[in-house]
Length: 602
Image (cartoon, rainbow, N blue to C red; front, side, top):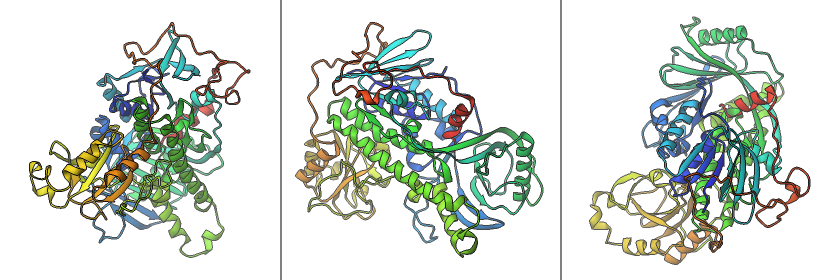
């Protein structure tokens, strides 16, 4: 099999290549830049617990070394504090949590890191991975498909043809891949604008993030957020009016001084200004995320970011969802139709997120009206913003896929547990086959299903005692008979699960089914559903991948008049009938480049 071609070397494309490599799939990453990331302290990302764990699992050391996990979060309106949340900095945090002080679990701490540090960490991890080839100064201009693969051409010092089993466009908001496919990208432009500054100073809430609505001092706007970074650096965002207010350097400095003085008892503390910018956020959603062997992910597929939502978070969830499906398809362990579930699950989740944000924006950002007169309305708005910034509720919680085409058929042996079907499982401690105790998330992303047995008391026994006792022999036999590779894990307890329950978990951590005891036939049926059905036989022309070059100068593109199932129909292809799926993509105007630069900065 040929390698997977990944177009775009931002965090999403880099992470996808590492996720595929972890599952034995080679890839070629085409980077149109020189590969040098410009340090921009004001360009940062906030990763929720699930995406931070994903990036760290992929070998990105900068997440641990150069990111900061917040110790808490505060919500203020005018001069009054409305909410304060303490985060769990250890491994015990949960994504389903309550603000009730009596709640047994605190929310897992978000991680804040500059985007250039995140990208550098991913590039360093790729440097240690032999299954990934990163090619710089390679700008895509042609994509062709046939029955067995994809051929792409790049411009650069030496124009090159590349051959791959699939191609994934991770090339940002102005995606060349999306344009070559002729896929529409409807949505709303400039739903929010923010003036941003990164500065080093001391604030009264070290390590805590702050959302301050309607601050009582003049000249700073309706909403200000402050997010801490390592080494005493803060990123501060000011929500700008929707009608294009010009932010001059003097006006931004005035905002900084007014804001710092308002937070520090009327006196502006010393500060060092490191970086500034004006970031514009858009809401858009591609009509299609898959055209045969070509797929879209990250900003190439969707743009969001208003009300505290995180675009890169969703891009990483895209690749977590896609990587195991692409790996099983590549290894011929699942039918090609499994890839259809990527669009079904992820596009539906993003559409719901955008719909919620678009419905909330008029109430949150509109002036006057009911919010001025009805008591309690502002408190509801504050709660909605809290959800977006803290990654919970419909604006930010990890998505569930209850209506996925991969859902297991209902059987009488199923039992309810604390996690709904299709939702991410809790990150409980588990015992691995080698006897070590690890977190459940550490076993994800390996192109295998996880079979989790809830066996109270096993934690106090040595593995050699319980491995051959009770349900374990039958469970291991049932797991070996599954239609896709699997791993058996054991946990003392799982929220809401009865003793001896068996949970089947997808490689991306979503629950397929939970059964009362070992039920081999039902477990097999659920695993068959999770991989999309029976796999197709390999095509006789498939050949092993050659990563020594990853390219071929003597392989011509497929016949452009070929209308086999692997080729997009003419109506999806720009240009004249019979023309190859290629286009000269003009350089963007300055405004468009600024919009794209800021679309994924949150």
